[in-house]
Length: 216
Image (cartoon, rainbow, N blue to C red; front, side, top):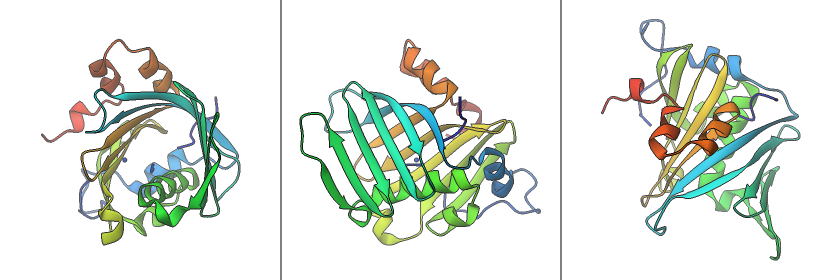
């Protein structure tokens, strides 16, 4: 399986990246270099969306694809069929039985965040992330997280935080927290399959191994 169509985007702290003086935090440059995946790339995903507008979480399965640099495709295969393509700053959404929708990426700040996150991960490009987010890291090479908070006020009106969670050369999960109470978690690659087959949400969340990195 191709490892990482690595985030949402597009999913938290406003501190600066780790430096040599902060030996307890991993270097984001090395972390991203370790999971970089040149296009074309693809990986399966399992996603959970929570919203005040939903009576229960929405669960999705599908595949993330990057046919070439500058493009990102999110193909949902269950519980409905939908294909969202981001190509050169333009978005198209196709769903069975509906007319294809087209709009500029600038109209959807949350997609800007997700697209920037995934592109930076695939390219191993920390500078691409730093253009839009403040970064903070925790953990070590076997289990790490990168917390991102938006730099621009416009993006911050839509996105509260985005978190990348991984270890041992792979990105496992992406968390996205939007203003207004909407949030999502995306499991990628092997953990996506395990999350889809998990018996409950606690088991799913344990796959990201966030507990040992949580300060709450």
